[in-house]
Amino acid sequence: MKSIATLLFCVSPVCFAGDWTEFRGTSQGHAEFSNLPITWSEEENIAWKVPVKGIGWSSPVVVGERIYLTTAVAEDEESKARSLRVLCLSAKDGTTIWDKEIFVQADEERVEIHGKNSHASPTPVIDNGQMFVHFGPHGTACLDLDGNVVWKNNELLYMPLHGNGGSPAVTKKMLIICCDGRDEQFVVGLDRTNGKEVWRKERDVNVSRGFSFCTPTIISVNEKQQAVCPGSGAVWSYDPGTGEQLWRVKYGEGYSVVPRPITGHGLVYVCSGFGDGQLFAIDPTGSGDVTESHVKWQTKKGVPKSPSILLIGAEIYMVDDRGVATCLDALTGDVHWQERFGGGFSASPVFADGRIYFQSEKGQTVVVEPGTEYKELGKSQLGDGSSRTFASYAFVDEAILLRSETHLYRIQK
Image (tube, rainbow, N blue to C red; front, side, top):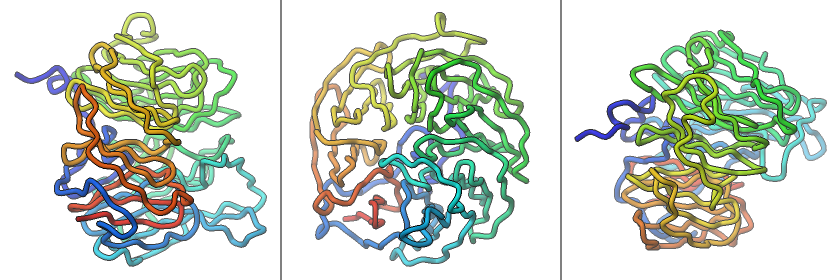
């Protein structure tokens, strides 16, 4: 018997086996890869390790035997100017295939960067031979997979607080981007063929802190697409083709929202960020303000502010920013178990090869078996913990790609 999620609900675009084409592969954080290692170190199960110039917390994306990622390179030690670049590396050995400057953040464009952010945090998205990169108000661009620029858009002007964050989401016709700055907050739909703005919708709630950093999730409900776009104060669903608001759920003064929504069991699961952080399970079939009518359950226990969450079967798995992992029932929100890993967590966990991989901010990975009872399978540490690891995992073949503050690793048996 098919589940409600299968009948009514799917995520688009499809991530084919062998490719990892956007933040979390799809929005769900599930990786269809096998024979992955459970433990590693600097001396064990490392196929290669290469330095990555500049600073960036974007996750790698993969098509075929090529890895793509963004970075921001300082012109010199004194200047605030940054060269905003896209890199293409060989998945086989990590060598650079091409390295191209796409935009320049001028010295006078002083973006307030949080200590846990970078000038290149949004992850690229690849679809149908096109790669879309976003550097907040400094520019959005479409490239082919050889690095040739198809179009650029420099017109999404707003003032991000703490730097850029949210990645784009793509449909067959549109590129959807959340632009939630300290001065104004809006969502845009760009024509993916030329980068021109098709629609723009202002966030229609009044909150004291409007800035957020979320990535939209594209879903289909009853054969109609929705772009689910959390921001400060509420989550909105839009028609990705026209920008028509379909529904919204308000959550008070929640702000600086980072976790990407996930879907399943006919529900959308949304975290409300910092402040009064909660996890909401929302029925997306409503219309208008559905705060009182379509929230099936909500919880504050163990909810992350930065890492996204995982849905595996009937359970949700998550780790909060302080390193407390939680498993709860996806239909009721009841907690099955909690375990304290310790340390800080920003990267989003993934489900791969039948296991859950949690990555801390200091290079530690904890591998857990899914289930309603906690079972740890392995624990690893890269380096001495001095090199930060905020970017989320990516995958290629039978390998894990892990980006640290200074290097990219291919981790493989």
